Image 1 (tube, rainbow, N blue to C red):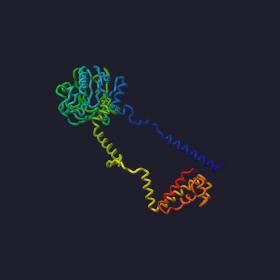
Image 2: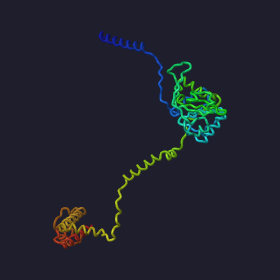
Image 3: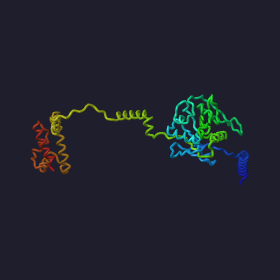
Image 4: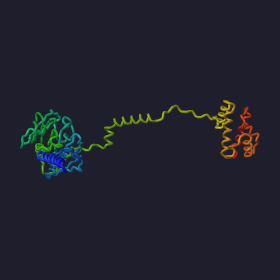
Length: 372
């Protein structure tokens, strides 16, 4: 190895060592948490985080989409979180839930759009005043940290309680005059917690400590005494029933489009064709009329030439020796094969002078063509 090559190798080695030293001098090991989109049940159940948190705390919790007693067997000491629109609860289920609350259950629900309207659920409870309140927000901060950036906001339309329910309020956010964003009131042996919105305990809000404290306080009445049933959505009518009740405009539009497409693609129908006349000519009469038309054009010469060429072509296919014959020799050969007179055959191949000669020539040529 010469001196120049050795110098180049040492320079390259030094550059690599410098790069490695710079990398390890500036490298910092850091754990990065990537937030991935929700999948599985977390995509459609907004209370999935609350359910899993309670299960890790060994508190029984179930998520449902129905109020059917076969699946929702409410007992005294249980808690029911009705996360769907309360106006969708029918009369029978509303009466059953109200009786369960009076027997010692804890019901959490949100008035939502039901404020100012009569619904079976709130009629059975008899708690909600029909007069709607104003939209408002209330902020909470972590009791331990007290940081402003960790505040939890509860926003929604304020609701008013009936006179008897107002006196039984145990905890609230708001007052009887301006309305409540949250109110827990006694009903018989049980309690009803009304919340303007479930957003503070939905989705990924429970990652924050202040939201966890708020949810823990909401579940306080029967916490640890029974099962928490989370009804995050209520099953609606079947697809066909919903389509018939709500989707008839779309069905009507599709029917019109289908009818227009069928009219566009179908065959055009004109007036009815008259029945064919009984005195229609037979096929032979048509052929005879066509022959007379052609005959009148040139006196039958073209028909005669066509018939002659057809007979000669057939003869040369059947008897190749005739291909070299012409004139009288050809006529004599034809006479031998057909048992006709050679003069009659020669006359048949001559251009006819009149209609009578044309008929005679065609008859002779037809006999020649029919011979094997």
